[in-house]
Image (cartoon, rainbow, N blue to C red; front, side, top):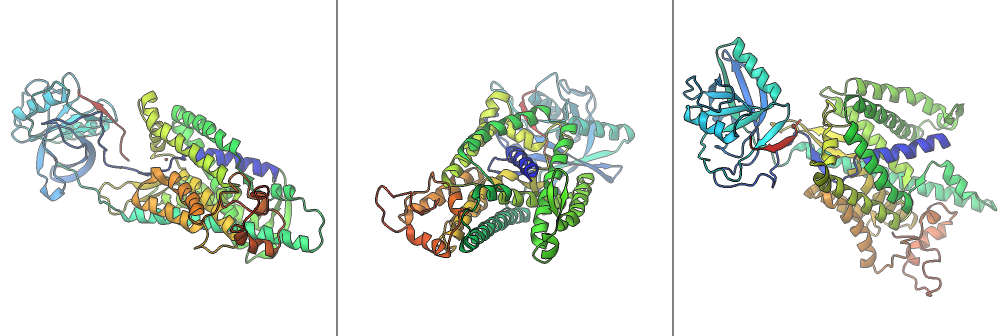
Length: 560
């Protein structure tokens, strides 16, 4: 049991440090604007992704994705309004001088390099081209911008950059066929996709399930200890019971060390991210998912198969294991292995979400915030960690370390598996709506603590703190202010104390003394009354009061 508990501590630190930033990410998102490419007259387009649909000899063929330039005309958003034009290969290839071939409304395919993007567009426009497709010399996409001193920006044709592999495919089409045509359009993404609603339900539902399970377990443990006290047990080994229960209480030191450990782990991911390292992360995720799924299933099935759940057998390294656990484990292992093998499939996200939700629920059941002081320190450190690695790291590494890790750059896949995702069903660009584990785990620690306190203080949902904390979490996610999720959750719980005129007497007093000590029913029912009872300065805070207490290619900016 000690070995298993130690493994869980390591796993929890690793999982939380992977995605502890409180924000929601969209996979395959449309290119966002930035301040490094300022707008000016003639060069003020928004950066948007562009679909390049091809036809070979009148038959619809492959579709490629590029990014529109800051200059030139805007690209139509609807496919029915987009013109189908013949594709021509530029001669010379870089289009830095007037092409030798006649264009007459053709879309010209040119290579990047040797002159400015705007010069290529001006030359193509003068030669009669209807659009210019610039092929990058890398597999990434670059934002085509204008230089500060440029004045010749009277460009009236669209310019689109394509990645190197897309350009190579178009060249092969031109070599094998004399009739290749393309259609350029940039469909708009819907404001709200049904995937966002399901993602919200998954996040809120996971926290609700984990919180009620944690609170129910705490109340059951308290009542069991009270029963032992009534049976005239003189001494109850509280510390021992807590150790064997598998609960890990976070303290202030571990909350501060979390930032250091998480930062080191994030740097390792950033520096070593590759195909083999992603495979290692998949293995770790499967191990955690198997343990989480097994814990949830055993807890659920033990209600119907009590006898099987109470029979144990000794297993090396793991200690006493119930027969029910032995029966469930092979199914969990098989489920995780099947997901790992077919994780690139169109329905693999279902298995990933099941494993992820089970892991999160189990972590929130095992890891407890003992009081509001520790919770505030932990979530505040996570907030600073997020700010640094998302925004400040751009100054040091010239790119956001957190975003690079979330995308899974250089891994060959669409991000690491430590997240929940749902395909965007009504989005013309496809992709996934995703949310990092930290968006659920970190606020979930505070929510579970609030409900445990409410249960043991015999508070109703309306009079307690859990309902308001969950309301804040759900509202922040609904409005899309995920960056404020940590601070708002803490503020709601703390402000509810002052609204009721209750002093934060348990700010530094661990509630574990209340959640695990032997209690009588009269103690539970009197906690709420005790909060309103006047006390002397000497006894105040020392009586029986408990605390109320991370498929769009990465983009860079270039002028040539």
